[in-house]
Length: 480
Image 1 (cartoon, rainbow, N blue to C red):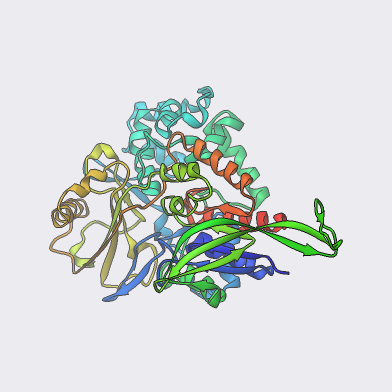
Image 2: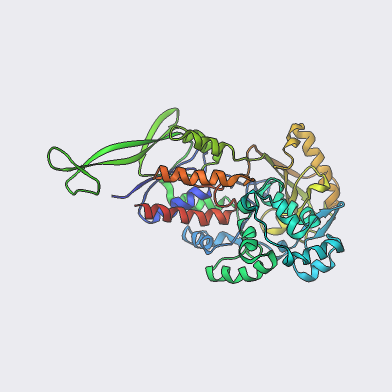
């Protein structure tokens, strides 16, 4: 008999895992609160502008991505970023400086002082730290590469990836591959050289060299295509209320291990199932399954599993998701005097601006707007400046527009503007996250059949979610 699996959440983590399971004979049901699949992957075409309100792109760090794209039939929609996207800028003293991507550019860049450059070159001679999981990315980088490199490279990078605070993010939890370079090879420069050989053997790409991808009609095309393959296996517009253990006695004539004999001589054994209660159209419904996979955000999962274990709710609730506003702007190209020859720019916290950075959306991928227009995606708030949302919304947007226009040398007002506020955006792998991770492992071990996944475990990127979906599927397969 096919094993039954209930998956909570139809984001990319839940859908990808559902696809692998369904393809290999599992009886899968996906429960999703929204009317549509994708989680934070939301794309919209309005007035000729293609907007991604969540992830704007992914990095092809694993061949699983292309495999999944091919299998769900959207290879013809899959696109790589323009080569210009390799050029990225950092704002310093109100000027945009290209981030140096090779030794020659590093030597000549004005982004770092001569002193800072010599400090970076000393990195191979810096010893290892014993702080492990309880060391922030700030401490790690300051020790290995110096303060200036932290301020004008890592600080803006952390904001761009996590919308995070480098003083709070755990280097070993949030950037495990970076920490591993020190742990295994004794340093970053040594590790980057030697680690490249390992990645080649695993057929993986580093995030620095992996190709950036999206889809002709935006990132939501990916979850939409997977959902189309699953069709009636997904139930939309429903709210999961609880997951509880259901134990039942089962009689059989073939005695399983640890079975006890019933009075009639047949074998009787205890079978553990999981009852998932959800609400649909105001009516409570139940599903009985062998496995439950949760891919919903940690703060949502905390309310679902509290009947099984009070402590699991505590650990899930302690994972911080900062607020982020995504501001999408469209201009006539003639309004923009800054050359659009890159991915965009990130802003170090030292620059004291009201937003984290801007992606030059129409430069990176085609089809984002008409040729005579330019499209930009700005990010506001995050873990380092959640206080900005105490400002009245219109005043905050006006302040950001003023700063953005000055940097990009823009004249006039945008011809198009949309925004989305994510109250809880990206999970933060902060110092102490290992305590949560250890408890999640313990919870799964004590409750066989329940699996916790999603972007608060194993990485926040699209590539991480795809890799983890296959790992989760294989764990379920081996549990049969």
